[in-house]
Image (cartoon, rainbow, N blue to C red; front, side, top):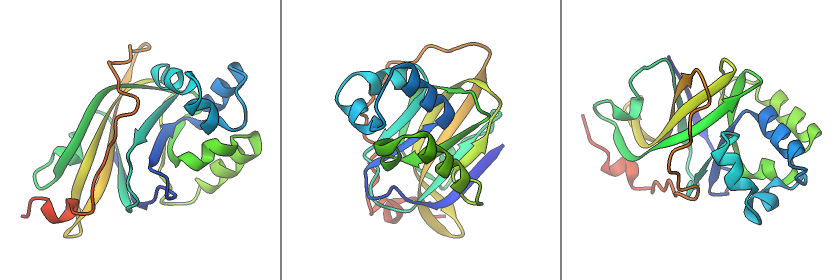
Length: 195
């Protein structure tokens, strides 16, 4: 199964994050972190811990482009590995815990004022079509991240793809570079293979 969302923007900050927001809120509460999670994550080890514990998956180096976001489930072959796609990054070893039946892709700005009200507002906005949120069975997932370009409607679109595989128990996080930069430049579409 595959879910795709087009024209997803990064709010002019070079980050995307993937998480179950309610799980992230519980992490914030359990560790008595401030409403400014962005500051807490960048001025201590709580951000690294959140990644290693499967609370949040960060994508650094995201340039200001419209992206196609793809979630690939149930063992389906990734779109970025199909003929005609251009793969630039492929990273394994991420884990993600889902507790509220959904994960969503969001921008760094949400972390700057992460309160119950903000959380409620975001979840309400994400009920609209074409928001990068999918429903998932609660539990643990191994996640592989791919980045590059996919061909859609005869145009190459910069894309991030999350390949999620459910596991029966908490998997061990791989040897992760938490600050790895998923840079895709403007010339990506021009250099993508042609059919």
